[in-house]
Image 1 (cartoon, one colour):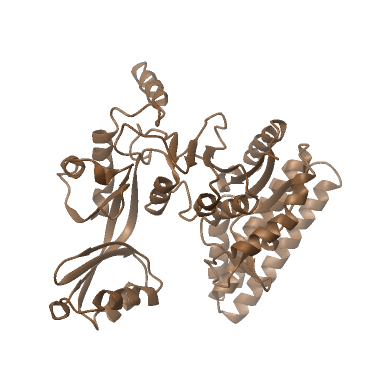
Image 2 (cartoon, helix red, strand yellow; image 1 turned 180 degrees about the vertical axis):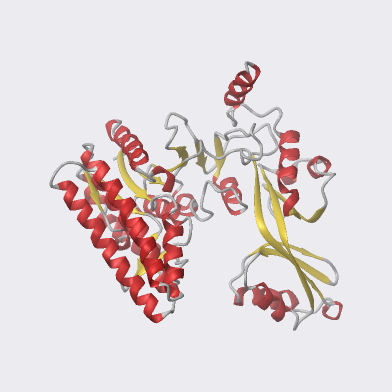
Length: 476
């Protein structure tokens, strides 16, 4: 059946120009004999605006909340009118947009009266972004001759009731996908659905958390045993590091699932950290592609990547972290001490990135958040506690780092002018990480990139693009 799941991010559907470009990409897949299932995000910045509207309403500012909704309504109406010009389809899609925004306005008015923004209401409000964008995209596809059908993602992606970051129920998703998507694909139709949004078994709207549209694409791909999952963004793929920090960053042609997962978790923003899990289970290749440069082959993520002559594939950075130091000489060698510490982080639902221990102390790194004072207060019942913010985690990812002699010496020689606060090596064969001050992060990345990517393996990295860049620069 050549089934492929194609997920398009917010910048790929941000306006009529972007949506037409996306339609051309999907149409190209159809002409090449593929059977696409399309997952789309909300239009760029819409989710942020919906969150602002929710916050305003929760503070009793009904006028401000409805004003935000009104501006979003106008944006979506204008996009729909530009993309769908045939009657009666134009009137139908604009009417659908108005119906959705009427429902949103009702929710905002109710929230402004109750002044209680619960996670459940927040999920309902932000869901309108994908609900509306997927309607417009499906209509735009039909306008351009693609036999598309809109599918409400909430009828396919079933989760638990952990609002704002719901966990998928895999067996229900597989059943729903087989029932609601597969028949359409077999009829050579193109299902279009919103990412990020879902529902629990009672039909109440939930979300998969920010960035969850990637996750939706992977869940659908896994449920349908797709031949590939394509993640369409506004960059050419996974890069050796952030090109805004290092202009000579290279596109990585191919990485393993394990390497991609490490990069996603430790700050590489191309992928949502959980995206590839359903793909790993079913051994489905994931392609990261650029909707603004569809000719680029992007990055291919597979179960086992070929050997790379270069020691590292990429450098990721995770900022806005805090270090928490827990010191308790009286607890030295006490059974269960560490479990008590981690139970506190579990209580506050706070994930720990890195851990370092000595005879009398434990240092941990976490995302800086409003819960830190409460976490510190609970930890202080066990030991002396202090914490510092504005830290950054530098993560170097490559194959078999642990088995390469002298690698740590090379890494820390490259950043010898920067103060390193914590180090983690050995916990993973493919990851070497260390913690520094956030203000030093860009300089550390530039130094490491210069040290390890001057002679990249052309089988793994897009060396030709660098040569063309250097040629263009020399001609100026």
